[in-house]
Length: 145
Image (cartoon, rainbow, N blue to C red; front, side, top):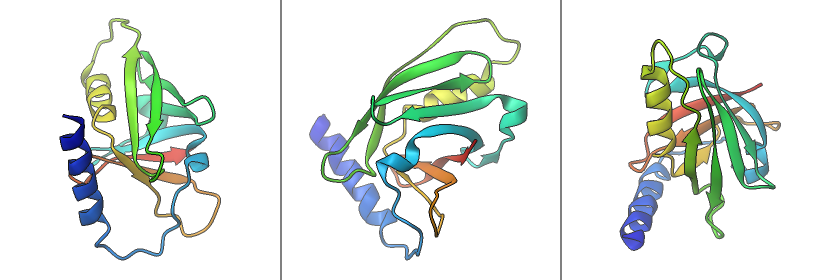
């Protein structure tokens, strides 16, 4: 199962690597800090309205944040050889009842699909991070807060 997963990840990276780009290669330290979710699965979002955000603590290998209603937390796992390969593990959230759970449910589902991150920024500091799914598609965009 793990071999199949990592083969799929490598295939996705190979396909994504075919595009030419002059963007910086995002380092794991670029993830550190608070990020607003500005796009998810092709839909533009305003984190000031949705309340959806993520905070990465790379040193502790932890992720936390808000789904807009509930808080979430989990672990970060990096690939030792290719640091842009990332998995967000054991994502848990509080369970307050909210009027509309669709944004929260989509965010939690999307976070479980993340396998890689990158940036389109051409100079440091990085202020936009993209999270990619298994097939190489961008599934979430984050803006530094």
